[in-house]
Length: 101
Image (cartoon, rainbow, N blue to C red; front, side, top):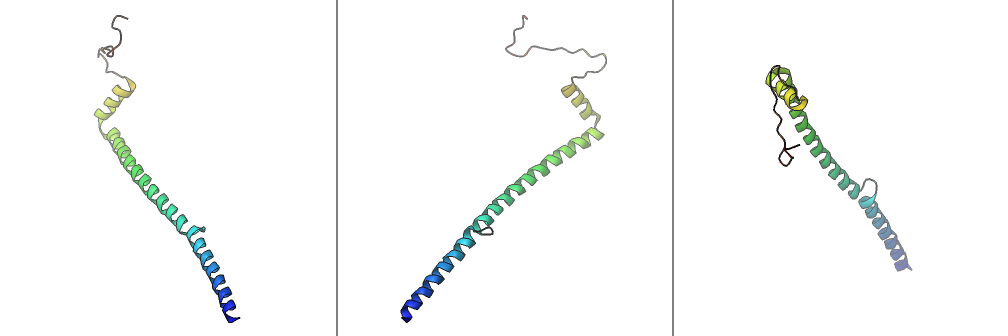
């Protein structure tokens, strides 16, 4: 009789231990969730570093626009197609375009 009681207690303990291990591994705060959170944190750190580099480039451009007239002129010429008074602009056809049109 005593042996049967021990077996029942051991079975209950085994089931309880299994439940605790499964919950600890796959539960809301378990190992799987922790692994996902670590991966997400690493992705966010990489994104922050990329954004910091982008911000540094933009800050440098802002400084140049505020202090360097050559930068402003280059942007006006390349992005806006502006020319100085009295300049003559020659536009050549791109390679592959018909020159006879």
